[in-house]
Length: 142
Image 1: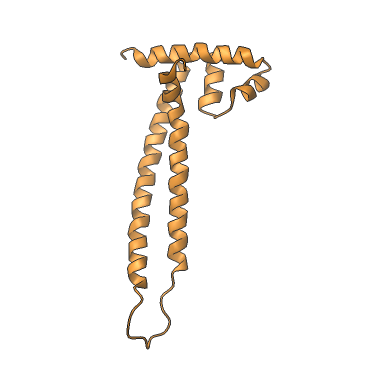
Image 2: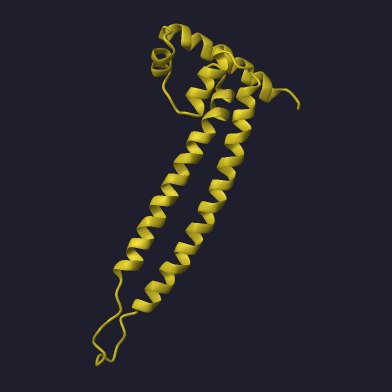
């Protein structure tokens, strides 16, 4: 695939956002487990069920997930701003609009073509030309 480096560079933010969403699901699941575990109510039992250990382990896991999530979000914001700045190097024309809608708003080329009232083939050509420029941006020394 042509301009694969530019595509991967720009698609990173969507992938990173997916990781954040997955980590948020993990957090929700651990919180759900934590709230569903109850302490034993029978005080006459001699043996304990280990519920407090389970709660403690889940609290530690939840804290770890929250730290990972904060780190993922920080990296995502930095990466997104960097990619937007790269796309903005294209100026305010059609190439900018196509790449912004494709890689920042996550729209498909066919939907971009429809919303901008251009043919899909023309938008695909604009997309390829813009990717070539991005590839040059990321390959050139800063």
